[in-house]
Amino acid sequence: METERLTCKHEGCNNLCPVSRTGNKGVIQHKQCHACSKMMSKYGIHNGDRLKLLEKQNYKCAICEKNISLTGRFKKGDKDENSAVIDHNHKTNKIRKILCASCNQGLGKFYESKKILNKAINYLKEFE
Image (cartoon, rainbow, N blue to C red; front, side, top):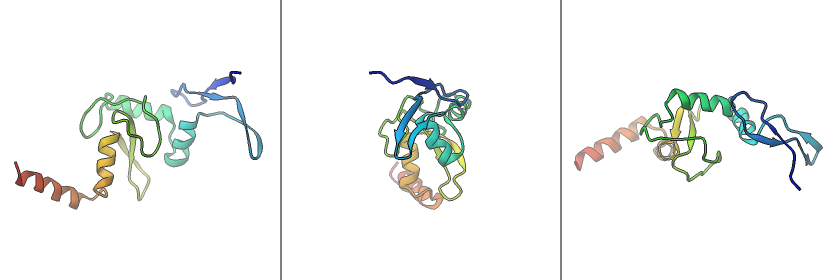
């Protein structure tokens, strides 16, 4: 049996979400999709806002300029390199720009440290 679905309430999102679901507190009415719910709680923006940011960047990663899209799943550890990921400052939670999953993970691997990134650049230059 197919569940009835509604369009997410956020402008520009267009994701479908169930009308309601039964949770541990009874029946819960849905007004926004799962992706919007996660982004609103973490960053204070919704999926439509993320699309606007991506449009401003011409659907390209702000670092490597590879084409990216919202078709990838929104979850930690997502391995789809073409997924549009919200990059943010982990201390302030302030959104910076939209990156591909690879560049976003790369910044994380270098602990978002300019000092370490500069050392990595100098290391690569040494072996040109």
